[in-house]
Length: 165
Picture 1 (tube, rainbow, N blue to C red):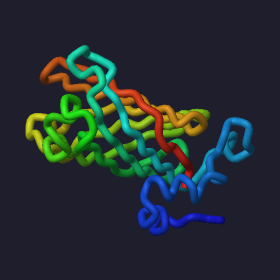
Picture 2: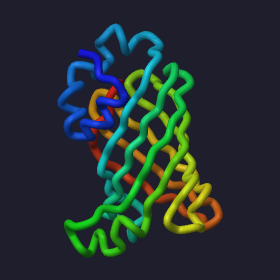
Picture 3: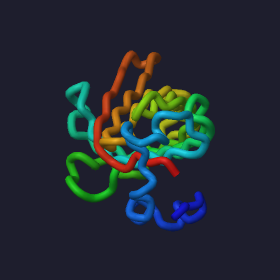
Picture 4: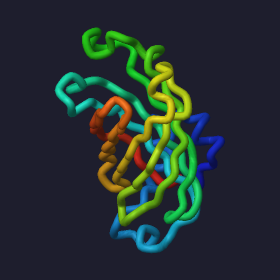
């Protein structure tokens, strides 16, 4: 069964994962060995791992990139999480919404993206780069927000949906 982009959006993250379970390329599959032309969808709830003040800080990200494996381009969004632990989400999702541009490539089972925050809820974060690595086999996502102006790198890790679409 092929899933179109429109169907993926209509299904949402949870439904899309179930609908395209058979579409995940692994390192053992012939599809993973050759350059693909198509899309990759990444969704994950990340938790801050460093520096210490961000340990456990919840941040949800989604990226959709398209093109050849060596020339992916697309967009994404990110936001803090409403609800749950009030200490971890004390500022609420309305405080840190972000829209990203993203470009990158696939190296084996790892999708490597360089993203830039083109819109954020906090003006000083606009233009801040992110480095994202997402594993097609394990679903592990690693993100680093690099704010050179403030001299910070905030590291986020989590597991989510990382699939070819």
